[in-house]
Image (cartoon, rainbow, N blue to C red; front, side):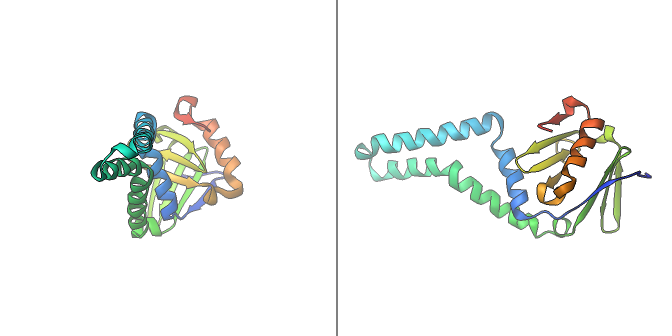
Length: 168
């Protein structure tokens, strides 16, 4: 694909970027609402029933309260840290956007995608997530887009239909 006036980004993902992505997917929608309600309910029961509970129930409620607030984020960070050490993540990836589409380069490999082949784009915090399908996505943290963020946003708005963009 011959690109005219591409907007090029070199993306080096960190464990923190991968962790934020994992946290977003683990806590969005109804699952996130359940996690919050479950944790708040456990904390409420722990506080209001402390004097009437024996040690086993106190520990159980404490574990329940910490499960989604401490344990899950910690486990997801460990997983992201392991992922970040893999060569496919450590090696920088070049994403080149133009009106023709997207060209992804990493090492000797190159993939070209037209705008029609891209699933959806979504801004989550300080990151744009470009989904190819339900399993594959490219993460573009603001640290990688820098001062070209507005140019990327303009391309996404121009070539990706509104129903395939979220918060962009």
